[in-house]
Length: 460
Image 1 (cartoon, rainbow, N blue to C red):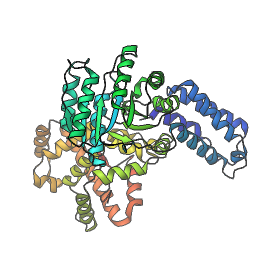
Image 2 (cartoon, rainbow, N blue to C red):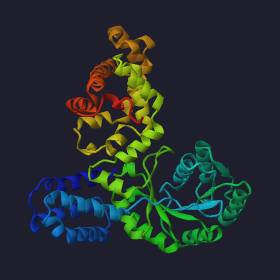
Image 3 (cartoon, one colour):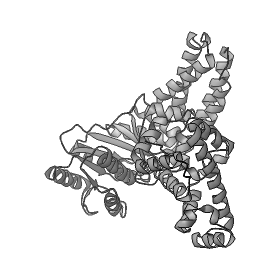
Image 4 (cartoon, rainbow, N blue to C red):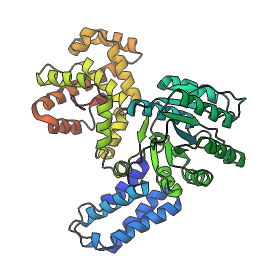
């Protein structure tokens, strides 16, 4: 996400790194490029003007011009102002109300409200150990209620049944009564959306707000709507006392303008980012981490947190011991590494969070393709246990059999065996010389480990 903005800002600021002297002309030229980068990213014009002006005021002062490292000082100012624009710090949900705490979700049709309800319910159940109930008050969109029911089953939370014949306020009232009766911690309410803002929609959602008195009223907005996101956010902010924003589909938005605009327009914090279609693809929003990611500095804290939750620590420890003893890295190990990579959102997600990930050679992009990882796992699954353990046995006839069994070509099998051999060599370096040698080996190959494996022991 934010690839275009990250690339443009990176190009603008790269010229300043290491400069021993910066003039007002340098600053003016850099800020012009920053302004163009933000506009191309579809950031709302008033936000761009304010952002650039705030940087200018600090950049032409003694803080930069008299600094021993003025280039770095200016980059630091850009990062700080970007963080401030995005919201300073992570803003958690306020669920300290008398149970059940009600979370009301509002937004236009197609913004991803129903999916976000499921993601949020899963997040609260798994990470905060909350007992959650969800209910749909969307009596207009066909199958909206059934969709939420299926989502609730998938994320293993309780679903309050409703009917398209019922009034939304009556549904909400009954759901709240049931949530109290069954001692739920949180009730998440999915509301109806429209293709555009209209008065009846706003009246209905205002009535729901009055009935429920929610602890949180979250505005759900599609990142790919660009500047429209800011206009929609302003309209909802006038109709409802919003407490926060959920920006969805950021994985499909290379620009990032919505995230930068919505926070400034509504004055409310972005609380979550929807980072994919899967129901686990929801990230708490940390402005300083996102600013760092946009500027190509990575997001190691989020990466470590994800590894702690998703990496199988026992498997990682066993693999680390195995390699340390010089027992080699076979195809079973490679397949396990890639499955864990998929659990963490794929190679592209990892690159996005690694410092300098955006500047890695373009060869890494091919390895970030999730379909390639899936294909590789299929090839390994088509091998016998003996072949996985001793890949040198795989000759012409075996390759043809494996390719047929996995629905791939012999060239794909050859490519995998070559990648495995390269990775095996890197793992030997890792066992003898630590992470520095491993990273040098990865750079020599033009990117990350083939197939996207994690270094053994990662997340321990």
